[in-house]
Amino acid sequence: MTKEIDCRGLACPAPVLQTKEALEKEHPSVIIVVVDNEASKQNVSRFMESQNLEVTIKQEGTDFHIIGKIGEGVDPVTPVTEKPEAGQKKIMVMVANDRMGQGDDELGEKLMKSFLKTLKEMGEELWRLVFVNNGVKLTIEDSDVLPVIQQLEKDGIHILVCGTCLTHFNLLDSKQVGETTNMLDIVTAMQLADKVINI
Image (cartoon, rainbow, N blue to C red; front, side, top):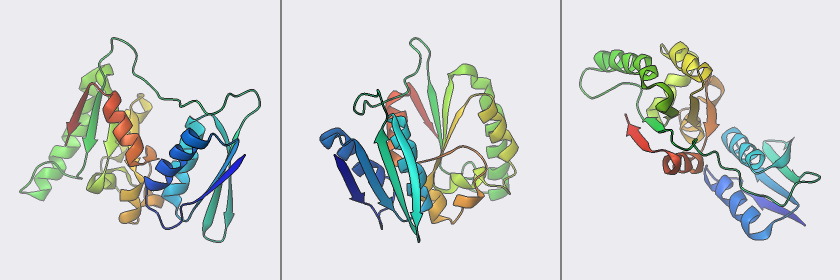
């Protein structure tokens, strides 16, 4: 059975949520999701891959047709959720601004840079670093803290960057680090984390 969903005009996470619902309720062998923006294309295709689907993308004009197929020898979609290893505490840090605190902006930028540089001191407990709202500006090419965030990613920290936020600020093509994500991924990460720190 083939299922097609038209998600044009919808902002994330709606296309991902509709894809998830169709896979869970209807179990199609092929699912085609049509979206009209880059963030949704990235999020839906990544979600399909996380569900063991073989993904191909076709562009028609400004629309993207994301096609997910169940591979040979693969059971109908079994959700794949990364879980922290037993006994190891997992901390998720959510960064919602490009500076720390309120008041003096220059000081706030210095504090944020210092905070990000110091995050490695959490050691293996630092599990996810999530950038939303104004925080996504820290992940783009002109960011002063980009090398710090890139090093954290090299050290094994999973970096998530809100696709809706990048699109809002017209920065999707400027992102240089992390995975473009959606609210479903963020909420799922919150559920799996032992502790969430909001900055």
